[in-house]
Every structure is written in structure tokens, then in C-alpha cells.
Image 1: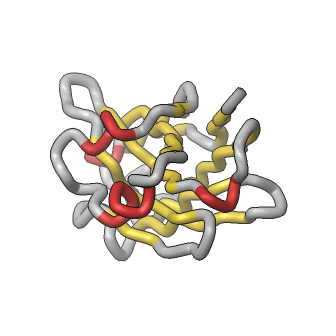
Image 2: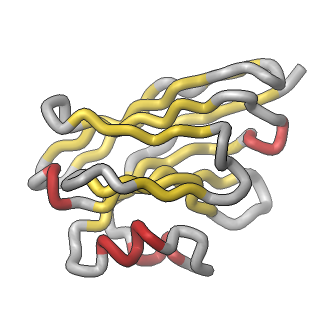
Length: 133
């Protein structure tokens, strides 16, 4: 079965950096849309970055453009999220999700669409990121 496992969260001061990883198993890795979502207490879940594993096309939410970078290693079946210049508002639980359907490419392209998270059927358990002085 599909399994996604995030790692790499932690606490950091504003302006600092963290790198998250998501190891995937149970599906053909190079035909997926994979997305990093986050959810802060009392806020809606939002997508921050997407990557198509079969080509590498990426998209970012406006709130993280220029600060976050999503990447992949198909051989390791892993995606990454490098987060730089972190702000207190980046504090959230970060989740890795996968869309294996035919709608994957469009979901990857339009990650800022309302409710896009509902299109993703596979989720990891999440890793906490806390940005605080």
C-alpha cells in the first residue's frame, strides 16, 4: 500500500533554515504529483509547493516563493522541501501528499485553488515546524 513518511521538522529561529524529507513507497514513484501542505492551528490546510515526479515541474504558493525549494530524488523515492528565511508564520504541521490519478498534473499546476487538498488521496502523518525566537 501507499506509504508516505515525513522527517526533518523541528524548531528554528526566524531567518533560519530547515529541510524536510518525504520517503514514498507502494506506488510507481515517477508518475505522481507530490505536494507539501501545511496546517497551522485554527487555519485551513494550504499547499506550499508541488512537484511532478515524472519531469520535475514545480509550483509554489505565493507565500513561499523565493524562500522554499521543492526537489526530488527518484532513485531514493523521496521528495524534499528546503525552507530558508523562515518566518513565524511558517509555523505549522507540514504534510507530504500524493495524487496518483489522471488529474495529478492539473492539481500540481494549481496548488493555490481552494480546497485542492481534497484531491489528494495519500498523506503522511506530518512533521512539525516551529519558527520562534
